[in-house]
Amino acid sequence: MPEIARVGVCGCGLMGSGIAQVAATSGCDVVILEAVQSALDRGMAGIKKSLDRFVEKGSMHAADRDAVLGRIKTTTNLKDLAKSDLVIEAVVENMDVKKELFKELDLLLAPHAIICSNTSSLCVVEMAAATKRPKQVAGLHFFNPVPLMKLVEVVKTIVTDQTTIDSLFAFAKKLGKTAILAQDTPGFIVNRLLVPYLLYAIRVFEAGLASREDIDEGMKLGCGHPMGPLTLLDFVGLDTTYYIAEIMFDEFKDPMMAPPPLLKRMVLAGQHGRKSGKGFYDYGA
Ligand code: CAA
Ligand code: NAD
Image 1: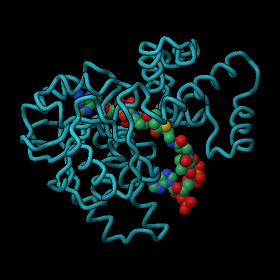
Image 2 (image 1 turned 45 degrees about the horizontal axis):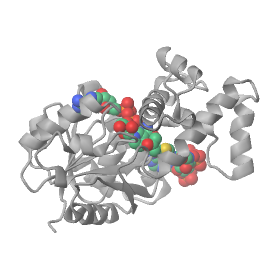
Image 3 (image 1 turned 30 degrees about the vertical axis):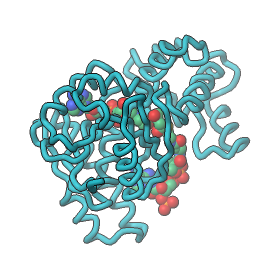
Image 4 (image 1 turned 180 degrees about the horizontal axis):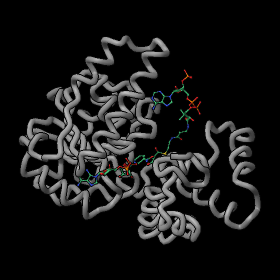
């Protein structure tokens, strides 16, 4: 089983930037691909800020932070990912965009390379089918914020081979994460449980049953959650949550998974949560 030393990351948003950071922190050379330079600049600023927090807390030396940053290269040209042993795709939650990327990566990468998606809810085997290496395609689902959350779901499709799964478990361990094995079903393990809960919190708010603050306080103080559901929705991104809900509802036809009307309207109004400055709460500029 060859070691994964060179990692490509597609997308430098909330998740791609975090994934690139933890991969570089573990010693991998990382190249991040973005559609636009401004997203790379924003993502790299987030990585620096996160590493600075570790340095300030004393859990990382300043020299190690600089070394981590030195291992990350950024690009808007897909060809710069050619030498990757593993590419982790973390672009928008849209099947057509992801399939196009998988197709191009398959033509570009060396035969041994593995391609993974960080998708929250989409069918991974559909992305695998866009390549000629479906046995080397899997889901690698990280959690937000990636530098802090310990879990990774390794998603095995009905055609992923065991060598690929073993490599991904070894890679997760190298990153200091705990990996769990999930099947290629919408939402895998965690989102299958989390997404209906988050959507229900919106319904409770939408129905006027409680204030946003009381809903959040209730779940924090009553159940010991680190964030209330509406704060967590703003943190995940309302746009991303809306796409996930649509995908899960489309697969299951379960009303629990259906995006509530308020969520759709907030997304249409550009209220995407913390990243846009407004969601259930205001975050200023
Ligand atoms: N990088 C480095 N350090 C960070 C950081 C980051 N990105 N974010 C926070 N920190 C540090 C802070 O500096 C702080 O350090 P000190 O304790 O030394 O002061 C510490 O982490 C705690 O941060 P805060 O005080 O700002 O806030 P907090 O105590 O609420 O912790 C949190 C933040 C860890 C995010 C916590 O609120 C939490 O666990 N929230 C729930 C997150 C969650 O549920 N994630 C899953 C989302 S679902 C998903 O990801 C799947 C999907 O497909 C949608
Ligand atoms: P985001 O909106 O923060 O970032 C997505 C980035 O992808 C944007 O910067 C965009 O410019 C870029 N992009 C779009 N098309 C691209 C392309 N063809 N090539 C390169 N870059 C491209 O989204 P996010 O929250 O980071 O989510 C990314 C993926 O991770 C989604 O599949 C999402 O479901 C999943 N995910 C999200 C979370 C979360 O909490 N937000 C958690 C786990 C998994």
